[in-house]
Length: 253
Image (cartoon, rainbow, N blue to C red; front, side, top):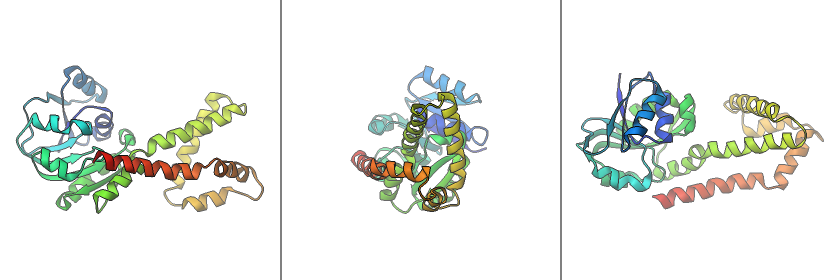
């Protein structure tokens, strides 16, 4: 099996690794031996781990999962020249990766936390010679889309990368609304989970506007609730969220 080397052992690295368990050989590199051991224990698989200092990346396929502001510090501790470097760092440009890391090819990838259950939406861009390999690797953890520019992946970061947090807010708020009206918390949670699971299937084949129109009967409950959402500016809030997240991605770059 192919070996993938994770540089960094935080939440995103763990989410991606969970989705790849059993499909590739995994090794992880970090600075804290106890955190590396916990990373291995969480995966429940045979995972090789190494301390960052003087680690040799020669001919390895790297998945870079460190914090963007640690790029320079981490790069100085690596030796050799990697085969391919895949970076999941928000807003970190290909130019900055090339200036700091030694590799034959560079690709930016933006998965999300759903990678841990094989349902990430991962967008990618970079060296076109790696496109096929990139799609092959990241398709093992969900859906993939190759984009034509770094501007597009920064926008995609605001949508797919940050999206789980936005949907979590909506899920929590809808559940709280049901509890406010008298539904038991456990029942409200179970209904919300079923709602999101079913909607996830429907949205794959049906345009959002058509889904909305199919539920909203004249003068009905959905129309009343939908009007309240519009009155409170939910649509504009969602549009603004993407705008602000995209701005932050550009600032990070």
